Image (cartoon, rainbow, N blue to C red; front, side, top):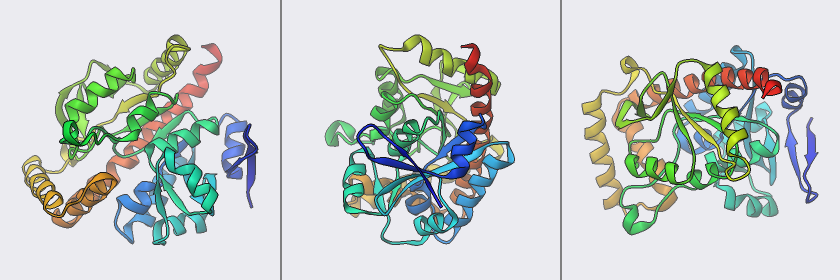
Length: 318
């Protein structure tokens, strides 16, 4: 049913046979996170959307590698029953990079964050990862020091991450400043403005923009070649939701204000903040946030697949 790749310390990643075949045949492989399935989307929509995201990668010539922990084993690519388990079980815990060892030792089921997904994907020689929104610096971080581990992970893992910016619940300018400090380049896909997840434009400009997947792949490969060994970082590719598909900005701002107030009044903090605020959006927008979320993730999966194909085509000449 499964294959195992053994790492240097004797522990193994279980890599789905379809993913192994793709890697060996130079077929594009796109890593997908599992936290969006277990904690980011409401049931029962989450399982349906997870399947749709994987199918989007396949529809554009790639192989999806949804990453999660099953019975303490890091899995690169999930079988159908495992995807269902991540979507439906209350026993699935949210795993960052620091949690992987504990979850493996305890034999837990776990859904991987952006940071953990990138870390495991890199170990399996996957170069491209599609997600919804990147984690970042939280509001009030100057008092709480609350900053997503996604940022430091990207500063150390050579991974091309396609996202729709960062969620508007975060401190967007502070997040962009941190990415600059950490030497993580941010490229816009057909935009000069950093997207705001549900919104096409967060209000903050980008320095670099590209119009084609081939150009993005070339910039990613050049970054990895020229920045090494001083820097071996990921690359963030910001792919905005189309203007006509974004949440109405006035509705968005009103609900965001209410959501932040509800979180503060409820004493929600730490890693519980993001799922709380996303659930607030889901419940208060009458399905609009779910519609936008699904659309943008599928668009990111499509772009990531095209970039992965271009990286494969260009890599031998780099």
